[in-house]
Image (cartoon, rainbow, N blue to C red; front, side, top):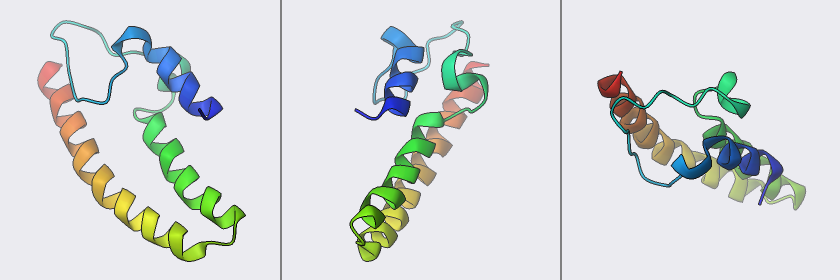
Length: 88
Protein backbone atom coordinates (compact mmCIF):
# COMPACT_ATOMS: atom_id res chain seq x y z
CA UNK A 1 0.00 0.00 0.00
CA UNK A 2 1.23 3.46 -0.85
CA UNK A 3 2.72 5.35 2.13
CA UNK A 4 0.39 8.31 1.67
CA UNK A 5 -2.66 6.08 1.51
CA UNK A 6 -1.54 4.23 4.64
CA UNK A 7 -1.27 7.61 6.38
CA UNK A 8 -4.85 8.43 5.35
CA UNK A 9 -6.19 5.07 6.55
CA UNK A 10 -4.33 5.27 9.86
CA UNK A 11 -5.55 8.82 10.43
CA UNK A 12 -9.16 7.69 10.04
CA UNK A 13 -8.53 4.63 12.22
CA UNK A 14 -11.60 2.43 12.71
CA UNK A 15 -13.73 4.94 10.78
CA UNK A 16 -12.02 4.13 7.47
CA UNK A 17 -14.22 2.35 4.91
CA UNK A 18 -15.10 2.54 1.24
CA UNK A 19 -18.69 3.64 1.81
CA UNK A 20 -20.04 7.12 2.43
CA UNK A 21 -21.14 6.88 6.06
CA UNK A 22 -21.58 9.86 8.36
CA UNK A 23 -22.18 9.20 12.03
CA UNK A 24 -24.43 11.93 13.49
CA UNK A 25 -22.69 14.00 16.15
CA UNK A 26 -19.25 12.61 15.30
CA UNK A 27 -16.70 15.37 14.61
CA UNK A 28 -14.67 15.36 11.41
CA UNK A 29 -11.22 13.81 11.57
CA UNK A 30 -8.66 16.64 11.70
CA UNK A 31 -5.41 14.71 12.10
CA UNK A 32 -2.87 13.41 9.63
CA UNK A 33 -3.36 14.68 6.08
CA UNK A 34 -6.93 15.65 6.95
CA UNK A 35 -5.51 18.70 8.73
CA UNK A 36 -4.77 20.23 5.33
CA UNK A 37 -7.01 18.45 2.81
CA UNK A 38 -10.60 17.30 2.90
CA UNK A 39 -10.04 14.29 0.59
CA UNK A 40 -6.33 13.45 0.60
CA UNK A 41 -6.79 9.84 -0.48
CA UNK A 42 -8.58 10.96 -3.65
CA UNK A 43 -5.67 13.24 -4.47
CA UNK A 44 -3.22 10.39 -3.97
CA UNK A 45 -5.20 8.06 -6.24
CA UNK A 46 -5.32 10.74 -8.94
CA UNK A 47 -1.56 11.34 -8.75
CA UNK A 48 -0.84 7.59 -8.81
CA UNK A 49 -3.12 7.19 -11.81
CA UNK A 50 -1.01 9.65 -13.76
CA UNK A 51 2.48 8.91 -12.46
CA UNK A 52 2.51 5.11 -12.34
CA UNK A 53 1.60 4.54 -16.01
CA UNK A 54 4.06 7.25 -17.07
CA UNK A 55 6.88 5.39 -15.29
CA UNK A 56 6.34 2.71 -17.93
CA UNK A 57 5.70 5.27 -20.73
CA UNK A 58 2.06 4.17 -20.90
CA UNK A 59 0.76 7.66 -21.55
CA UNK A 60 -2.52 6.41 -23.09
CA UNK A 61 -3.26 4.47 -19.91
CA UNK A 62 -2.48 7.57 -17.86
CA UNK A 63 -4.86 9.67 -19.95
CA UNK A 64 -7.67 7.10 -19.95
CA UNK A 65 -7.37 6.31 -16.25
CA UNK A 66 -7.31 9.99 -15.36
CA UNK A 67 -10.45 10.66 -17.40
CA UNK A 68 -12.31 7.67 -15.93
CA UNK A 69 -11.12 8.48 -12.41
CA UNK A 70 -12.24 12.10 -12.79
CA UNK A 71 -15.75 10.93 -13.71
CA UNK A 72 -15.93 8.56 -10.73
CA UNK A 73 -14.45 11.08 -8.31
CA UNK A 74 -16.88 13.77 -9.41
CA UNK A 75 -19.79 11.61 -8.27
CA UNK A 76 -17.98 10.32 -5.16
CA UNK A 77 -16.88 13.75 -3.91
CA UNK A 78 -20.28 15.32 -4.52
CA UNK A 79 -21.88 12.49 -2.53
CA UNK A 80 -19.36 12.70 0.33
CA UNK A 81 -19.54 16.48 0.58
CA UNK A 82 -23.35 16.44 0.53
CA UNK A 83 -23.39 13.84 3.34
CA UNK A 84 -20.92 15.88 5.38
CA UNK A 85 -22.98 19.06 4.89
CA UNK A 86 -26.13 17.29 6.10
CA UNK A 87 -24.32 16.01 9.17
CA UNK A 88 -22.92 19.43 10.12
